[in-house]
Length: 102
Image (cartoon, rainbow, N blue to C red; front, side, top):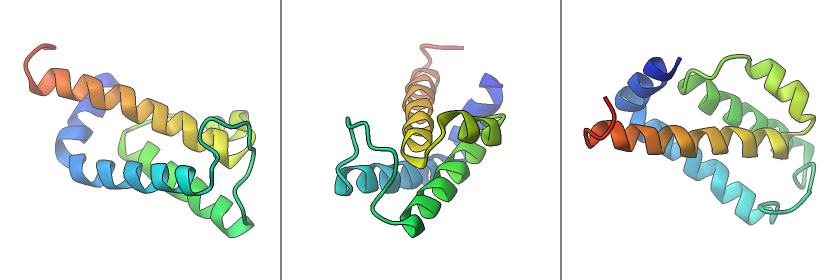
C-alpha cells in the first residue's frame, strides 16, 4: 500500500495538493479546525466535503474509504482523518523524493 501511495503522489502531486488545500480552506472558513464540530454549515457543504475527502482518499490509494466514513460518523472528522493521512503521506513522499527513504 505504501509503495502505491508514493507512486500516486509522484503521478498526481498537483491534484492532491489542490484537493488538500481546498479542504483545508473549508475547514478554516467554517471554523471547525481544532473544534469538536460534527458538521458544516449546510447539508450541501457536508456532502461536498465528504465527496472531496473521498476523492482525495481514493487518489492516495486509501483502502476502506466507506468504512472510514462509517467509523468517523460525520463529515468533519472524516475530512480531518483524510487530511491527516495526506500530511503524513506527503512527508514520506518528500523524504522519498529527496532520497532519504528508499
